[in-house]
Length: 287
Image (cartoon, rainbow, N blue to C red; front, side, top):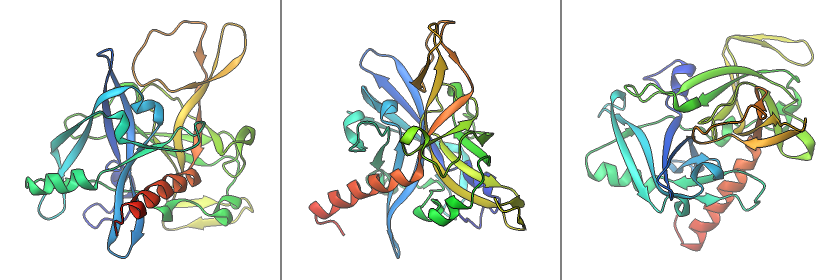
């Protein structure tokens, strides 16, 4: 994610997400978080996509993506934005084939090309496969690691500068273990409506200690761990149920109480989305 115009990693992260605004069939407005990712990187070629949860775009007849414009020099124009609205929004997304995996993506190359033809360039900082930890890196992690989550909780954002909210927390279960047998782990962080689709990253600023007690200092450590999608809540019967993070504000009964924990889909499942895009391009003979 290196960009010479923005050397600080945390500032770069502020350009990694996109606010997704959906119009539902009943006329209601819902909102979630998406993030930029580069698929199929090959020399100077990439397929840019936005990734979010399936339930963020479910039932949406129209969706709008809010982009930050870029200067001719490639710098972000924080106070200049472009809202791209897409009809039949739900059907525009490529969904993960496993119905239990709440992930989907939309290629945005055609949007970028269309805007460039209008003389508009957009600025964003994509994640890439190189940030997803491999088996050795995951095995080296401790059960409790510092994380940062980026998104739009309760719809809160800096609308003037088109900037998301950055929040810190810790891993609540070991990121190298499959929580309840699924490719997921849990974080200790408050997960409010609008947090769906938020990228969750391990971020160590300046120094960190590995599981063997070895101390490292110098460059920050950044790993893409996964995607927020749900959280456990207590219900009146005393049960704990897993509830998708809502995409809009709705009245919640006092018998349903969130407990500031969030479920995260492991980043490795993003590779399966990339496979869908790869097969689609091969079928259409796109190089």
